[in-house]
Figure 1 (cartoon, rainbow, N blue to C red):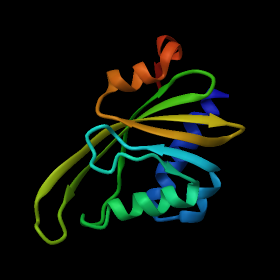
Figure 2 (figure 1 turned 180 degrees about the vertical axis):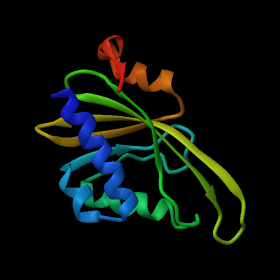
Figure 3 (figure 1 turned 90 degrees about the horizontal axis):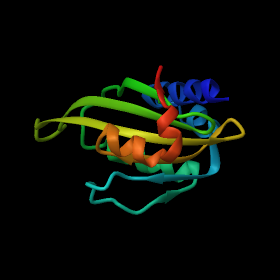
Figure 4 (figure 1 turned 90 degrees about the vertical axis):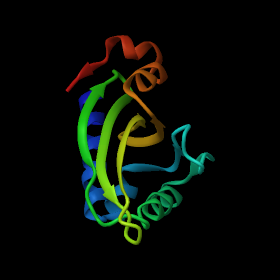
Length: 139
């Protein structure tokens, strides 16, 4: 099951980078929970696959178009995968450059992502995976 979850996580990022709303939503449970990183001003949990799509797309409005890169994946066992995602961004209006570098702990049930929780670093992501973090392996 865990390798299937790794593949779903990869397909989700690929679909997002293509702007394929239908493919992203289809890979998520309709009641998906999306928890932003602690350092973001938008810190409320987003509920629902459609609402998550709208929220994430709106986060990218200030930036020039570009794709997120999959920097690493850690298989956490039965239902969790940690995904390291990065992207160099530049403000559409300001031209300010910034780096997006976060870890996502994705939880799956019945082949769908049910929770997406974001972290500032690998250690925090592994801690969030709990005891499965001890069997985690990079893939």
